[in-house]
Each structure stands twice: as structure tokens, then as C-alpha cells.
Length: 293
Ligand code: HEC
Image (tube, rainbow, N blue to C red; front, side, top):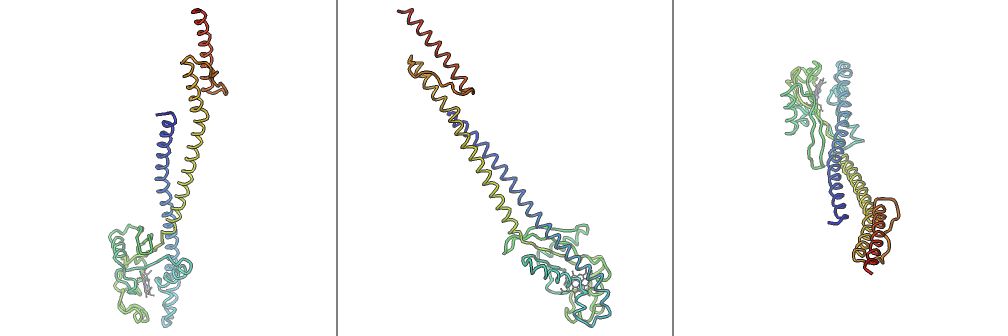
């Protein structure tokens, strides 16, 4: 294999390995970053909704007990209602963000969990130390990241509406019927689930990945071309020239003149060494010729 072939195959192997490794790691990193960003957005949204719930149950609810006749006012004291109102406002700006409060035995039948949601609730019920669960779900609208937290009955204030229809405000019973009673203190009754689409951050990550890999490939191609040009100009063309002259000299033909000594690199040093050798050879030949005359 010629010098250029050896040199280029080594370069290609190194570039291939470097591209493969950086591609693999940057792909992982970019996707992890995209997911972490979405997860942190989901966390912020969850906290926002949680604050609305706390506010409703601690501050609005207790002040409403005297005005129970007023249906609108009653609704405002329901934590789930406050949570959904906040979410409605958020969805005006971010329609693709989703929030569900699901319970195994819900007050509002719309909050009956789907299979995957029920699995999450049961996971929380089975392990009281579990504070949250997140994952990615494929949906018809692309991948969604969900973040779920358990809903536990921590305050006895909750039980006023969720124990029996007799205890609950009559207006509530009139609206929701007999669903969602029999909840107990400390029981994990359901889960809050925030869903955020992953398709946009993933598309961004893909775009960054393509740009990064494209730039890296561009740099490699430029380096490859430059090194090849340098290889030709500094080494291979000069060596071929020297080989041609040396070849002629070996046949006793000194007409091609001296080796090119321009520059002070190793090839130039070799050329001047060859020139000295050529001159010695010429002198030796002259000497022999004289002897034989
Ligand atoms: C003033 C009555 C009232 C109080 C107090 C109350 N809730 Fe509710 N809760 C309701 C009503 C009514 C709904 C259904 C709201 C809807 O249609 O979205 C509901 C819904 C829920 C839901 C959603 C699933 C479902 O059953 O539809 C959960 C979970 C929930 N409540 C938990 C709690 C917790 C925890 C507390 C205490 C922090 C609490 N609730 C306090 C009346 C109440």
C-alpha cells in the first residue's frame, strides 16, 4: 500500500471512531437534556396546580361553610375544581399540556383512571414512600412524558366532602350523585398526572444533533483534504521526484541534475544527503573512468 493509502485509511478509521463515539454520546446527552427539561417543566406545572389545591382547601374552603347555598361559591372550595381551573388557564397558552386528577373511586366519573393511570395509582398505594413516578408514553399525538404524584387524604378537611353523601354538601351530592365516597384519612385515593408532549423538545434535540454531527463531519472532511494536499506537496510528490532521479542515477544517467534541496525539512535533508552522495558517485565514476583509460 502506498504512503497515501496507509495514511488515509488510518485517518478514516480514526475519524470513523471519533464520529461514532461523539455521535453516540451527544445523542444520549441531547435526548437526556430534552427529557430533563420537559420533566422540570412538568414539575413546575405540578407545583402550580398543587398550590391552587392547597389554597382552595386551606383558605377558600373554610370560609365557604356559611355560604353553602351558593353553588358557584361551593365549587371554589373544591381543591380539584381549583386545580382544573388553573389548568384551564394554563392550557389557553399551552394547549398540549395535560393534567388529570384520577381516583380509583372518583367523585366525578370523568376522573375514572384509564388502565395505565390505574397501574400508577396502585403503584403508589402499594408503596407509600414513593413520591412520584414519571415515564414516556406513546400516544396518537406522539410521545408524551408524564409525571405522576400520589393524592393522599392528609387533611380531615377533605373528608367533609368525600366520606358519605350525608356528610357532603347537598349541592355536591345533587351534582355528582353517589360517587367518590368512603375515602379514609391517610389513604392514597388517586394520582395527579401531568402530561407534556416530548415531540417538540425531541425534534429540537434531533436538530441540534444533526447540526453538531454535520459540523463535525465538515471539520473532518476539511482536515482530510488539507492533510492530503500537504501530504502531496510536502512528501509524496517530492519523494516520487527523488525516486525518479535516483532511478536514473542507478542506471548511470546523471543528466536529470541534482535533487531539489529547497526547504529545511526532513525531505530536504534527505535530498541534500542524496546530492552529496550523487556528487561522490560522480567523482568516483570519474576516478574509475580515468583509471580504466
Ligand atoms: C367542598 C367539598 C370538597 C372538599 C373539601 C374536597 N373535595 Fe375533592 N372533590 C370534590 C368534588 C365535588 C370533586 C369533583 C370535582 C370535579 O368535577 O372536577 C372532587 C374531586 C376530587 C378528586 C378528583 C377525582 C374525583 O374524585 O373526581 C380528588 C383526587 C379529590 N377530590 C381529592 C380531595 C382531597 C385530597 C381533598 C382534601 C385536600 C379534597 N378532595 C377536598 C369535593 C371536595
